[in-house]
Image (cartoon, rainbow, N blue to C red; front, side, top):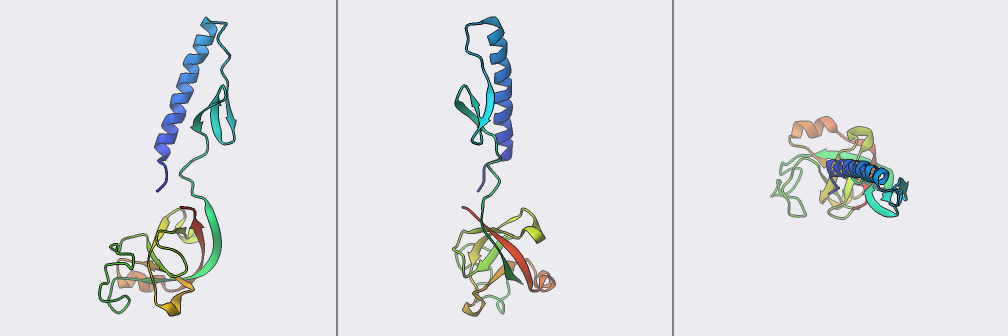
Length: 159
């Protein structure tokens, strides 16, 4: 889904180490062009060549933020259909699945005020009468009941 922050940090370390070696080389050969690292447009550059993206590439971009009525469901036939463990998109239910009629399958969303940076994905649908809601899947009926219905800020993320 998003780039690995460990890779970004590793690349930054490699660029710093290589900059140190180049700087040592500069002291040996005074004719070698001086080396400078400087951030330009979110990139770390070496003599105008991009080395490492200096921003965190795993930081998702929020395309929309609004308050939505959020409810909860679990995999019981009275809350779903005759295949309670299969979503409308054909995947198996799991933690992080939401049902939503007004967003496309595969859309990533967050509920930052309640779940912080946890990312959910739209893979299920609701009855047409609930087209204004988002429904979060829970492992048990008890968890879904405990969640209830809440007005929560949802962030739609760029995919």
